[in-house]
Image 1 (spheres, helix red, strand yellow):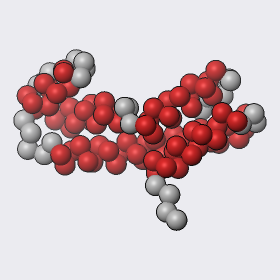
Image 2 (cartoon, rainbow, N blue to C red):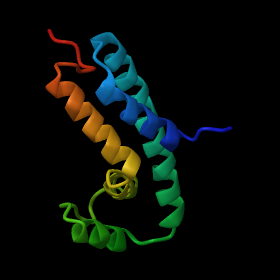
Image 3 (cartoon, one colour):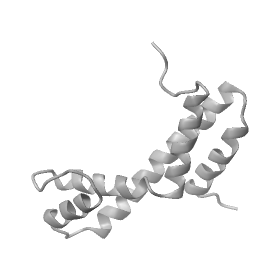
Amino acid sequence: MVTTTTQRLLDLTAIAPASHDEDLLLKLLEEANALYQQGFESHRGVVARRVDGTSPEVLVAALQAAGLPCDASQDRDELILLLALTEWEMTPAALAYSEMAEDAARRGVCMIPEL
């Protein structure tokens, strides 16, 4: 059975709340973060192909309709990145990861080491 990036990310987010070991929770969070990034990059590629040939003005209008401030002076790749991120953050996998990271932070577990 092949596990997709999304399915593995959802599996990790389901396991994390029951983890009471901080080291294990950190490992789960790190793996989930890598999968989140991988999923986002994949989605960015999908969005880039979908909007290929779309004018920057249309991209700006789509982003502004989503509530993101931007303008046509921004680089096309940046506009595509913003559009992809806006869409990705609303996927079940990304939402579950955000919840996982917030829960871990409430329990004092964070991937950024304290100085």
